[in-house]
Amino acid sequence: MIKNIVNLGDAAAYCDFGEEVSKEINLEVIKYFRTLKDKNLKGVTNLAPSYNKLIVTFNLSETTFFDIKNRILNLDVKDKNKEESSKISIPICCEEQYSLDIERLEKKFNKSKNEIIKIFINKSYFCYMTGFVAGMPFLGDIDKKIQLNRLETPRVKVPKGSVGLTEQFCNIYTFESPGGWNIIGNTPLNIFNPIDEKKPNLINPGDEVTFFEIDKKDYKKFYES
Amino acid sequence: MKADYFKVIRGGLNSTFQDQGRKNLYHIGIPFSGVMDKRNYLIANKLIDNNEHDPTLEFAIQGPCLKYFGNKRKIVITGEVNFNLIRDESNKEKGECYKTTEINNGDIIDIISTNKSVYGYFCVSGGFKLNKVWGSFSTTSRANVGPNNGTKLTDAQEIALNTCKSISNRQLNFVNSKIEFIRVIKGTNIGYFSKDSINNFFSKEFEVTKLTDRMGMRLKGFKLNNIKNTNIKSEGLVKGTIQVPADGNPIILLSDHGTIGGYPKFGVIISADYDKLVQIPPGSKIKFKEIELKDAENLYKLYDIETNNIINKIL
Image (cartoon, rainbow over all chains, first blue to last red; front, side, top):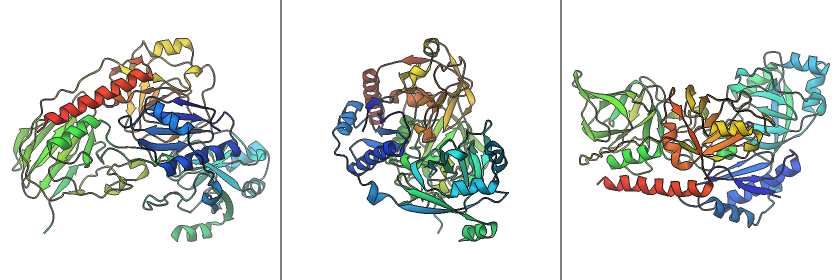
């Protein structure tokens, strides 16, 4: 449930679902997000769901914070998470050229590369949100045995397709961009496709994601197809 | 026969096609984008008799240099811009902003720079021949979304134009108003900062640094002291958000901002002051003033009415 709605500036409502990050709270956020998306309220311009917050931006020429807040509070929220979520399987190559931070991980956890990859692959992940850059999914939760902090000095360029770990989350870089996540491997799949207006994101909030390991040869094949 | 077009001799620093922005895509990581200075965009489209949602060519600091091929038609530039028209390859005329000017086959428009401001707008009668992407003509170059393959103007490319229509000459006497203070509503994490920092933010000057573009404006000056936590759980952002990373230097998020971030939100620029904020060039000083939501809403109404009055003056 929404704990509180406050204004973020004069043209956005900031809906607070609590402080902790959990799948339960995030599913609530996604429920509200999907309901608001379907309702298409007059004046609403954008919806930004995240772990435990939902920001609703609006056009100040058409409506006000007071009005939007009331409409969110009186919303008949429908749970369509089951129908709208999909299961997605992502190939990942962890060979040397793609596994940029494996040594850091090996040292930190005192485990071999194979052990670390096994722990990572053996779990299904929940997509909490997408964003930062277009289509980037924030997935969780990774096993406690391989959780670590961000790099102290972020990379200026993280290659496109990189799969990174930080705290209980992993993500996939949909574009080459700066970033500080620990890179364990790389996927040849195109996670964001700007040409596809209907479904640009391969992974959407609420989806379940699993990874399977491929070698360099398969990587090329996937990439070319 | 080939339609009328511009040949790009020089793309300029950051020249992109824009309109009023792209809605409903924050959740997949695509920002609103759109013109930075909406008022100057609306004036440009009205002067050239185009629709208020038609695309414009926005440029930043150094603009493009364009050579025209086609039948005679009109152009207009808004903002505070130095530009020249070069006729018959040699005759140089100084351009005038807010005034339609006729161009002929072979003429060159050289947009040299903006003057004590950042953004300018170039429109042409008949309009640019572009296709909407996701319901908008805006370019988000970071995600390659939008017309022109989602990219900035590049040297040697061509820009296709719609059939030209004849329009009468129009002119507007307009002076971009300057503002002493940029007004701010306190943000959701204001409590993360020391009382002193909050007082200093609303009383001391900050400098706009060179690390400023369509994504964000980095400020330098008094460092804001975070007394709670320099990170928050990543959450959505809106344009105008003032976020403060661990180094204490505020960053104001602008139209092409990342959609999710993990830095505390100190405040948000009010909608009525956004056009003026984005026009403050690097190296200039900036001052902030705290205001309440109700006042911000009233100021926006005034801004809206004022914009409409300006537009309606153009016949």
